[in-house]
Image (cartoon, rainbow, N blue to C red):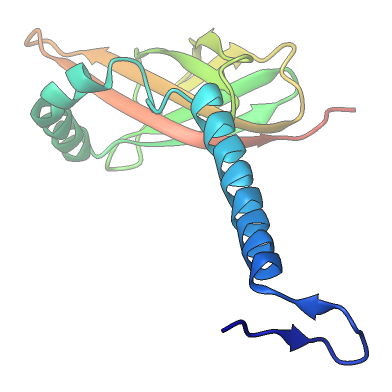
Length: 171
């Protein structure tokens, strides 16, 4: 027994063969698009957020201890952009400038590592550190810095800072 349906106003009949062909074509397009998207995703991204994620995971407890040590320091920082210069101000818990630090790090775009560059700061005043910011285009940047202070006991205080910076076009 064959069931046939006619479409209103049209004499063509929708048969089981037509329904199967429509069904197969629909899912064929869905599978083709999904396959293309999966290929595009896997061929352009390695899946790793950073270099050597496994080894960084092994040192997770040390990373947590470093963060607690930084919190105990009570240091705060402020990042500013001046014409051609990146300025970092570091103060202690009481608001006093932290002097004689070695400040270095990197400046990069959040979406790619193509524009990443290392930055080296020099102390220009009490708790004020400057680095040249030549050839950094306008837009969104990430400043990733490490400030180290050698304490008299031989221990090194480490302060890490990661902050977004919106670089405005300079006239």
